[in-house]
Image 1 (cartoon, rainbow, N blue to C red):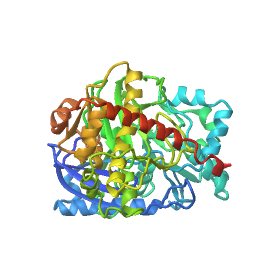
Image 2 (image 1 turned 180 degrees about the horizontal axis):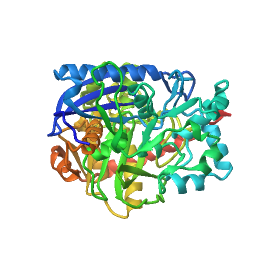
Image 3 (image 1 turned 90 degrees about the vertical axis):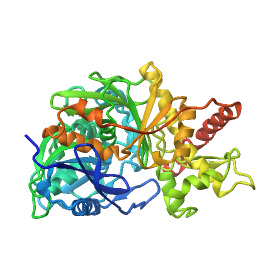
Image 4 (image 1 turned 120 degrees about the vertical axis):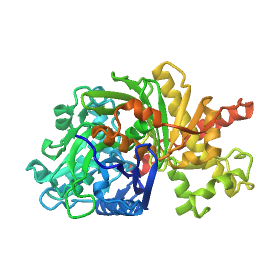
Length: 503
């Protein structure tokens, strides 16, 4: 393959919005369009999306970005896809219609099912084959739930009439008008059904979780030809040659090509990854071992810790509490106070991810007094993002056996200087923000361009990475150490909160 167009497009399908970005050979943004879509919370702990709305928001931003750049499809060498991971969609092969709303990665409805699987002794098998822990976060329990709760779904799945996919598969299916049912290795590796050592769907896990093999997509490398876009729209004929889960794409976009390099993405959640090389590093501190990416036969692995509510806590302050009108208002409001006055916000709205893994934890605001203000809540929200990421990095350093010298950061909340400085202070590590913070989209573009020769190799890509700002840690005071201890106390109070409701 060789890319003829002078640009590459990334489709960055996230949890709360869809984005399309056109990049040039220097990795610069030529045009970008973004569109939020509806979040549905039909019951306590449930989070759903409309798959058709995901598709429409994504394809419309693609058309708009192309038009904004004054380009046509022929100007694109390739398309790369990055996507919210684990979110589960099942649709009819004959009609392409979803059988139910998408169950989002944040959804906790399958906590009881996951409890039963642990009681059946499946945890060790899951961790050994997939690098994951049994949790509602991953796709397997969501698939099982849909097959049991949608009339006739299991019989149709076993007959090969239904297709399962994470959001990348759904977009590829729609872009090819049903001709291609595919995913990449990084997304497959987040289903709890994929053997990351052998690079295949695992028959023992499919049987244990009752998932018919006929549901599953073909697994491709993260960089390589998947299909060409079909249809009568401007993207027709453009090859899809890059695909990765959003956090894997961000790791690649941050040029973390050497073992020990790490990034943290401050998006809806916060996801820290450390590249660990060609061998799987098993975690001893409740992190995940995961595929970083696959390029041809080359496979790289990573350690990961995920925080389920990161930047989403700012959206909560904006949309539900309405104490700010735009997300940008959070920093000046937080700066209006010098400290939180002993107030802690634990945003466990959808449970805890790493390293706690408590699906029944819930949000908690504690330590309030009569003098607690909007500013204190805003500052506590930002500090909660950093506290959670600190817990993950501490576990990661223990697993890797070495201290991290630099954390590369990206995502919307990484533009918040107050948050980044507090993060550096907590970690005792330099925090570096790149010139292009849309590294999820950039990583998808890099993977796609690499497959068609648009960029020669990873060394050329690494040379494009550039620093925009760096935050050096300051010495911690005794008060700050006590502040961390207060956070830990608050976390303990938030754990297992929803158990009575669940039972």
